[in-house]
Image 1 (cartoon, rainbow over the protein chains, first blue to last red):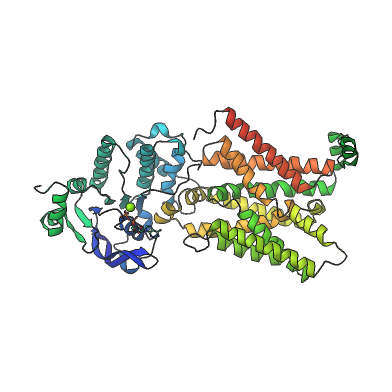
Image 2: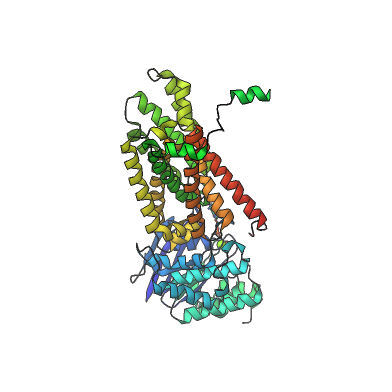
Length: 237
Length: 296
Ligand SMILES: Nc1ncnc2c1ncn2[C@@H]1O[C@H](COP(=O)(O)OP(=O)(O)O)[C@@H](O)[C@H]1O
Ligand SMILES: [Mg+2]
């Protein structure tokens, strides 16, 4: 079942395009990895997907009743100020807000959702701690928990492992894979090609000039794929 | 030297504070002032936490100067200041607080508006001096808050109570959304919260509170009502809820203390309230320091 359809979409800032003529489809259960160099426009594309920005041209279609409040989002780096007073619980539970309509309080179900994801991400002990006093890796997990609270059908992750140590990175990848196994569509930005190949089902490579979209197998077989796999030292894989 | 200074001093410290209170408390102007001041201070504190966290500390200053400018124009044209100031200030607030890309960024925009309206107001007052009044006296009373807080009419008090109730209700109902939109607007927007609607509502309420507060502390000192309580709360607590609640409580206490001191010792109301808020802020800084600095 198709969820999102990009038709000849160009994204950029103030009519200056950074990535042009992208056409691809995201279907239910997909694990799409978006790769490309720094500055290729991956984050810009994610913001466009989330309707934070309008596309410069082309059309993004939400198919089969996908709603914006069914998509969770982990931003790359946020502008959250260093002195913002907020506890971990306040941050995580705010992810549940998008479905509470005008209700001023969280329902028990929403609280349970937040508690569940905090448990999965092993941040229960930090519940009452101040968000701004956490380490980078802990903050990342708090924001991931918040994104998971907001997720119903799809989760958009912009470089979720940036700044995490190798062990936590592996945990994170496994967790994302598990979420995907539970039926949540994953769209992940990464510049770790080998991880993308071992976890994802589809790849979108954004590259100035030539873009690629297809399944992992198609990517391995393609010219562009072969070129980059060789560069990444996985040529024989 | 010191003696002449002291003999010229208008402050009469020999007044027995509690004796004087007994005399003034039952009077209707005291009751009016003690109703209005805490309510305005409460609203300003609630908004203040959001504004300070959104890096808009000076918006109160800018908007209050807009209020000053429009008030003088309204007086000159013999229009009711409320009906002119409120819409214009609201428009400016909406323009300033609208998110997204803009050429003129936050603090510069506020500075430009602030001085422009301040000058406009002063020029208008000089060209069309109020009948029988003296210009500098009038300007001074608008800028520093006149005694108008103790000459409030009954309808002023009612209006103030209604507006405060609206602000409180807004905060109570949308507290979680306000948190989400202030904490991370992009996330809130991306996951389907209508961030721009809340920003708009916030802008309108900010304008209303500021127009009200100009009566209370004057155009120059409004920033104090917005910034001090929020900063006090942020020194003392680490959760958003505790910061909001403590800011509100501190603000109300300071307003009440300020009014009482001002009435008993006949000091300027606005400045006295600001002085109490500054004192509270310094105490909070001290507590924070004794706790071992801001543990980040
Ligand atoms: N707010 C902005 N205004 C203008 N240009 C921007 C803005 N943000 C990013 N860019 C430019 O857009 C390009 C793509 O950025 P980005 O999408 O963040 O790349 P990536 O996430 O792939 O590293 C970069 O060249 C960057 O300089
Ligand atoms: Mg990026």
